[in-house]
Image (cartoon, rainbow, N blue to C red):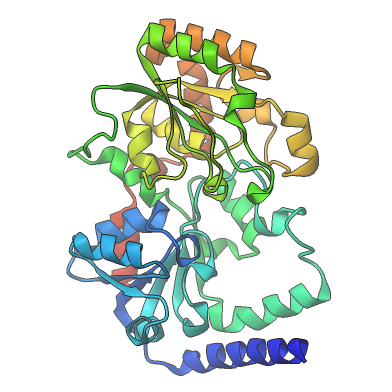
Amino acid sequence: MSKIIKAMRVAGKYFVMYLTMLMPRDYKLCVFGAWLGERFADNSKQFFIEAQRRDDIRAVWISKEDSVIEEIRSLGYEAYKWNSLKAVWLQLRAKYAVVSNGISDLQHTYLGNAVIIDLWHGIPLKKVCYDNKYEKDWDSPKQKFRDRLIYIPLGKMYFVATSETFVEIYQSAFRRKKEQILCLGQPRSDIFFEDEKPEPYFKDKKIILYCPTHRKEGKETIQVSELFDLDRLEQFLEKNDYYFVIKKHFYHRAEREKLTGYPHIIDITNDEYDIQRLTMESVAMITDYSSIYIDYLLLDKPMLFYCYDYEKYLAEDREMYFEYEDVTPGVKARNFDELLCELEKMACSGENYEKAERERVKDIFYCEKGRGPVGNILLDMMVKREF
């Protein structure tokens, strides 16, 4: 019986989705969402803020979380709760919908015939969506039927890439036509180019940001105390007047570690910090396979790669679009001793650490437009109805 009820609900959802194609849609209205409706973050956030500065677009945020609604309203912007009548009505009327993670960032049931702009949540080093064989069987009869069914009401979908290399990748990853991939850049990086810089979170501190990607969507924990010799790391940090700020992937937000006794090591994984602001105020970054380093290239600051589980990661978690060595600018540390050695070198070299390599890799990931602000370019395209 439960399977029958579930099937009826799914059928009803698709019926409503097709019905919403008949709704007249307002070209000045754009609804925004991010991270399954749970966060005010990422490309959607920055693009939403930029839209507020214009009078030719009405930008509205939709979220499941009361705290997110309160935060946005406190900024003087328009936001509504996911299941409210107002949120449903606005999604039925909006011509444009902006997401960062996928169509489930909003209630896509109500977006039939809307133009959906997926900004994505990072330039992918790892294979994503249809290219990621570990996620699901994308070519199963059931999945193919769903894709065909949903393409009719939600087929007006565009993705934003940062270089011609990624235009080709996105065609495969999202199974879209070339004309549905826009070669621009990431709106979340626009903050890097604004004249007025945001207040730092860690005022008067030199921070090294550690941002590892998730392991199996958070199912495999990342234990910093096991990956780092915390005593030696603390000694290095104290000696060089650095602070080691840990920001794990959103999927690892439930993890807790005791770091008492290490005043220069701070874990902010469970706190709501804007990652772009954190990167701006950091002096260097350590990551592994996270695409955050690609954003970081635009800041022209030193970065290190701590890939302690490289073989296992490729074998069990994700394949990559590139040879890892070719697109990561700098030494790849395979254990803590190697990492600490590179940290010492970086402390001596400052911003010149691996500078030539950073420039080489930047040319792979960014077209000319992608190296500057792109939000207003996208907004102009919406206003001019170029989608």
